[in-house]
Image (cartoon, rainbow, N blue to C red; front, side):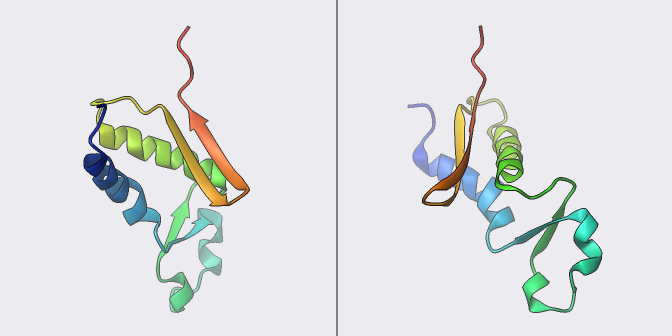
Length: 95
């Protein structure tokens, strides 16, 4: 066993779900357009990168790698938007 599933679930919840669940992601250049008094903007996260699926995936990979603290090596991550739309990351092969 590489990592106990319950430990992995806690790690993903803390590093990813708690941050992104029910959040609106906007580029920091859009900060002025987000009305702070409106309920739609109550859980808004501003990022220095364009919040595309690919960039969110890279942020998730960084967060998971940091949370794992070198205890195990992250091999692959998939972020799925819809049934036919997703982004995938795989650890580069070492020659």
